Length: 535
View 1 (spheres, rainbow, N blue to C red):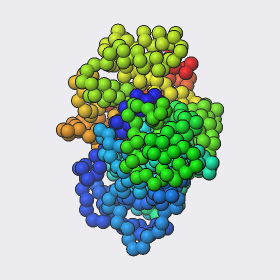
View 2: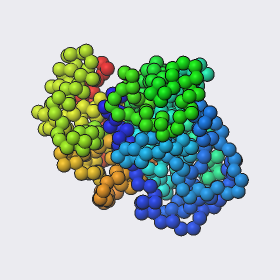
View 3: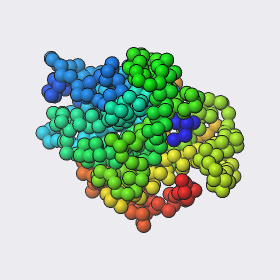
View 4: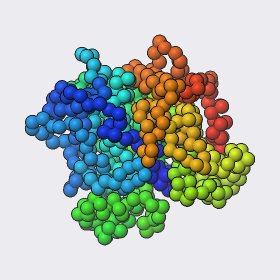
């Protein structure tokens, strides 16, 4: 992922942040039953007919000597732990929708259970938040409606991000410590689910991982990671193709980590790691935030790398080759992913339209030395084809980073496992006002429908879903919940969502004006995917 778009993703925390349940129209009543886990007893609270147990530690605090180590087992507690409030978010910089944190004691998860669960075990859905692997928190999302309407036990998790979660330093490499600590945190949370979720009424044999943006990319990483095998049984990747934010190399990550140490006053060589562990979380966070600049010539990026431990190859290539954990998959994107990033980075930051120079600069980043491709990109993403350069630039970001990669993943996955593909196209999704361009079905727009809360924090409240949009929202919850239960999103009720087949129309268009099925050739034409096949 190029630095500029990485900055977009970090600034907007993957394009979506939900007001916490304290700010939503939730209603708290009596306390739900106390749950006994192997760590100890935990109480919760009842919100909108959903039992919520918040701030449960699934790993030891990664502080002191445990900073930049794989997650360790959590400690037990005596008495009854208060589960009425979210745990702290992991250390991260301030962004438009994500507050700053300098806290490292952050490896918590949250469990949401329908109050009328009865005696049967419900399917489990584990949410992995987005944020470009740089920001975000489970507390940004309200899972109560999805749990209640989707008939599932929904778990949301924190994991280490930025330089705390993706860090490769020579001394750690010599100890065979994976740099993908954030990914290992997610795996530790999934192991906790396997061992503890039955106590809350969840079925550990029916676990679905699902996530958006970096969380969607994480879903793909679990599909290919040998360490994630048997920790989940279905997967949903929303706006997170396998090639999103997964192109960093171990060499570049190591050079970057060493350069960060030098910036902190810790000389390269033996002892640098110990020196860096003496620095405060605030010092490390402020020295490592993505700002478009460079540290000693190394781009500031903190993302997963192929380490031979958690990730043994290129994720997109492994999916194409059938080298992944075989489970049913839902994968999809929104039609106008890139508009959020153009609105945030260009319209809000500069208060002006995109220029041809902006587009050309990005064309050169994509095409590199391929002048024929650069010429074709320039002619394709033009004012004449899209009406404005802002829409043309947005379409290029949509197609290059999201749509075409997700469709390639869909085609590859469908050769091995049941795969269901969608495109969310609702043009009037609740969105912040951009006076220079309608945001359409922007990056993260579908989250408002899935969680049925307005997902973007704005100075004035966004309008609620209208009647047609509410029907679409309820349909999406039904699809996601049924998929978690059975591995197939369909019930006896229409509309039917066919399993993907490349040779016939089988992708679902999610739109409040009507649900329809389309074919991959039409999708590829709409998103100019022929331009990116050579890449």
